[in-house]
Image (cartoon, rainbow, N blue to C red):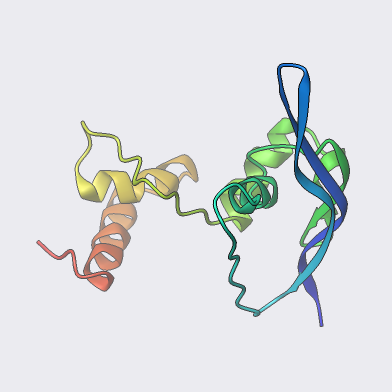
Length: 136
C-alpha cells in the first residue's frame, strides 16, 4: 500500500529545567492511504506530541517524517504552510473559533486563505455546517 504518513526513528524531547523528558523515543510508524488509525494511551504518553509532529505543528529532535512521500524536515516554512493547507486536516481538542466571526465565516476561513470566492465559500461552509447538524 501507499504510505501517506511515515515516521522513521522519530524522537521528541522536552527540556524541563535540567531534566530531559522523552515524549517520543525512536518511533517508527507507517500509515497507509485509506487507513483509519486510533491513537490511545494514558495522559502524558505522547499522543498529542505525535499528532503535533504529524500535523507539522512541531518538529522532531531527531528522525524523519514523511507526508505523502515528502520529507517535511527538508522543506521551507512556506512549503509547510502549503502542505498544511492542502493535505492536512486537524481537529483540535478545543474548538478555537474566532469569536468575532460567524459560524459560516469560521468554517469558510481556510477556503478564504485558499483564494476561493465568497459565494462558493459561503455555499460550501453552509453545506458543511448542515452535514454536522448545525443548520440555521
